[in-house]
Length: 174
Image 1: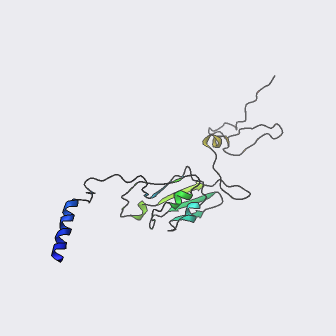
Image 2 (image 1 turned 120 degrees about the vertical axis):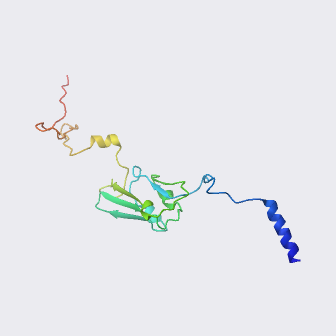
């Protein structure tokens, strides 16, 4: 009886054919919802620390150098690629890559570090979006606005020796 059942099992396996993918010879694309390692975008990150608070493996570290500078470091040693960090990011600064092969001899290859200048509210300390590039150009250095005249004055140091500071251009109005 057992020999007959083994023959039936062998015939069933032979009819099925090959079901294994020949991976190294011809790799297949990863599925659409595949979650690889997290990729951090420093341009979008506001440094709120939500990713570090929700990481079950505790792979994202936060270090505040001072009130304005925060360092976020992704270690990548025990990460299970669960995607919680990407889900809780309010600015979508973390995306899950589609990299399948993450094997490396050096653990430092997986690490990522973001040095962020924090834009924080002086009252409550909450983070907000930094100014755009155009707004940053307007606000460089110290401000010497004319409060009585209610106008902006752009004042900057000249880079050439012997040149004085430049003020705004006087415009005569009729």
